[in-house]
Length: 293
Image (tube, rainbow, N blue to C red; front, side):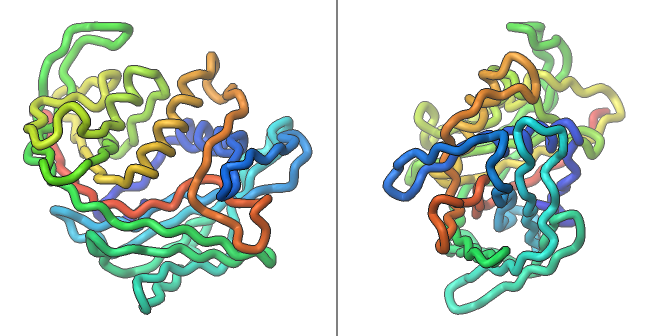
């Protein structure tokens, strides 16, 4: 999700946790039959991370995907970047080719539109992969605020970044928030934190969301620069991330995650026993910046 407008600088800890987790998760076939694999000896699997983004209040014209290959669970090697894939995204009859920029990052220049369907196609080592998602419309962040919260359930006391937005009444909406402080992505796989960062409008459909706190572990102090990204995502993407967060939160030690069954949406058209791991998303995103004075 790297764009000039959407910072994609992830912390090493976050990338390691996500990559290890994706190495462990197990995808089902289209008929939902579980595939049994030996995590210690199985051959590498393709891992897809990234989205096609449509900016609600920011022009996004660079789309980014990251491709890696899983490493054996019992080994110490990190997943290796995939550098020789052929990647494109179809928008109707228009083909957007992606170019490898290094370290498994593939980019294409185009402006995506809400309501349109985007189909990812990847050719790699004789296999063809595909996934489709439709960009969901969503509300903008109306404003960011700074609000003091006392310590609760292990979260620290202090000043935190809160979001103000209004959920549309006519649609079911699913949200995912990302917070950057001074250019660093804030991520914490604690149950309280992750479930606030991922929401559906079941209990606030059509209502204002006022002083909402997506992240309760990351205080801000004077001089900090905070950037909040509010993604309007599909129900399938919501379910994927919810399952991923559940699996992360169930681990007693960071990186020590038990194997689980999480279905992504990137299928292998050549061999359904080797569907890719990860999720290809298509989302609209609102971005707001707040300087802490």
